[in-house]
Amino acid sequence: MNRKSINPWDWGLQFSMDQAEIVTNISRHLVCSGQVSLRPDPQSDMGVTVVAPNDIRGQMEFTLANVEAVLNKAKMDRSNILSLRFFTTDIDGFLANYDVYSMWISDTGNRPPQSLLGVQRLILPELVIEIEVTAGD
Image (tube, rainbow, N blue to C red):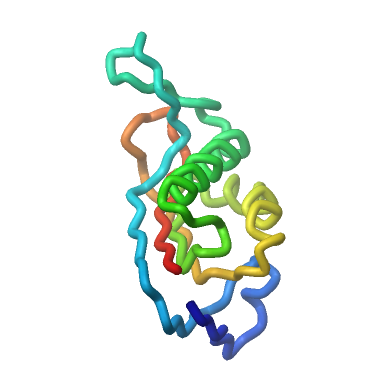
């Protein structure tokens, strides 16, 4: 896979993102459903438990770990991420904790394009962040 950053403006670089990328020579394309801060819990009605309820920093950390688990299962890693979509019920809280994502992605040298969307609510009221990822190799 070859990537070429497209940045008519440099402001996105401080957020570990490119405005766009041209990706060529891609053999596999992974489309990941929205990941949230859930872990298996056979004792609960839904079979899962919310990790770090209403705690945006804790949920960012756990959700990114879930994203990484999906990537690893697909025999990929963070360097394979092509784009991200962040959904949150708290834009200001997300931005105040953006360093969690920046530290998570920084060692890859990858600056995938991303979107941040404020939403009224996620699937469970205690959830405050959801992350969708596309990846490829």
